[in-house]
Length: 288
Ligand SMILES: C[S@@+](CC[C@H](N)C(=O)[O-])C[C@H]1O[C@@H](n2cnc3c(N)ncnc32)[C@H](O)[C@@H]1O
Image (cartoon, rainbow, N blue to C red; front, side, top):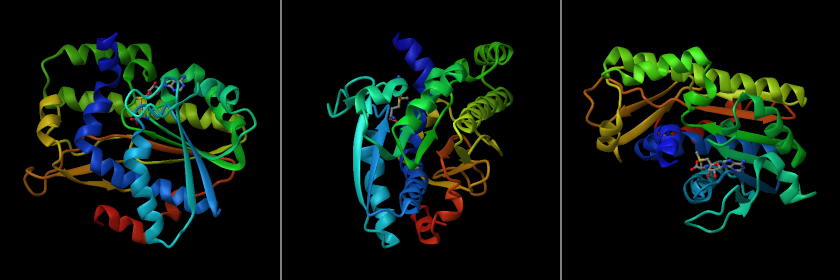
């Protein structure tokens, strides 16, 4: 079981450790922009699959700082939930994302945030997850989905999975790493497609921001490199196009390690154009 979890989520954990500060600096302004866009004096956020309360512990302070910078004094209330109790914080409300109404009844939330969560049911279950979320959202509410790594076993076709397994067994080379990056890009794309399709069935729109791909691979991080990079990633360029590119201290000038791929999907009843709403000042956060 542990091996299975490592297989599924080892990449998420490694990426989160190495890219943690950069990830937070890139994602927090987007969440802040979504809160700002709601234009309410108080916003209630439900975190699903919150695990060890990563959102409250690491993202929320940065979100509040972003809002403070643009003069928004909104009051933010957060409910952390997960299918399992948070082993560290012990603060999670138990809620299955497939049956949120069962836990929350008629309560409604302005925003649902899932960090690497709604992908876990695979394409067949995306409709059930989104409709469960839809039921507990305010009429103008939105879902903010952030994905670090999309596990290939869930989001690739059978032939792509077979190819991925074969590539994984080869001695790693730059070429094989590039091929894995390409497969990872496909996994992201199929996750986004499922979100877009199922959201549309519910009459919701999706705005997808962020990375689906990797470019300019000069050196591809493996677990050792991730460990070596810990705390050294100083910037995550977030171009609102297709890539997250991280410049890493210690990598010769002009070279990039492009390893972090991720997706942010915003599902809402109204088209909210989040990327246009991120205020210029907030970009300062991650060093534009
Ligand atoms: C990859 S972890 C992400 C944890 C946290 N969001 C983070 O970013 O650190 C996925 C989380 O989803 C939770 N999860 C899995 N299935 C779930 C379900 N049906 N309902 C609610 N949470 C679920 C797991 O317990 C786990 O905490």
